[in-house]
Length: 217
Image (spheres, rainbow, N blue to C red):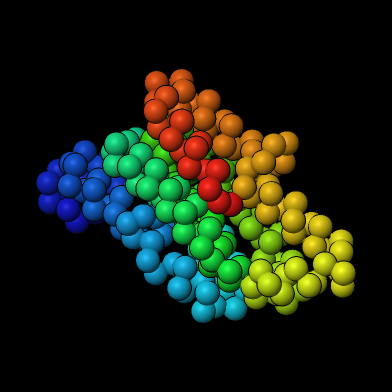
């Protein structure tokens, strides 16, 4: 706001007419959300937090910065957001493959999903909100299930199948939904985002982010 006021004389963040103001705001929000290249803090913080705190960090705490992006979407730089989105999807999927701790897997899943939200915010902000709401719903289900079965890593998750089969089945389906497997809920926002990117003649970006999403949750 101060940079925008200095250059334009306006304090309104919804009218970021100067590129420097837009860049600073985008970087600040990206750091708060955990978008690449400002993602380093998020997996470590989530891994060291209790599951209930991790749930809040992954869902409710992301709502204010997403709302700020929604409000300023006409002033944002689409090229910058597209680059950050593709990198977030790539790194979120790639780094998630290496993990055995469930909370770190969910952290990189969050980074990957934020890439999908960031790439479409400048073209269809409502799609970003839809994606966020569905992501928050699925992530809440995963965290609450993990909190019930008390499973910190993948090795112990395999042994809990016989104890509470119904909860484990729900967890499995929710993880598949997070991965965007049709016909589950998580497939809908990705399909709509790919459609919108195609309408905006962003075929390369749509193809790239679709292929990168195959790597992880």
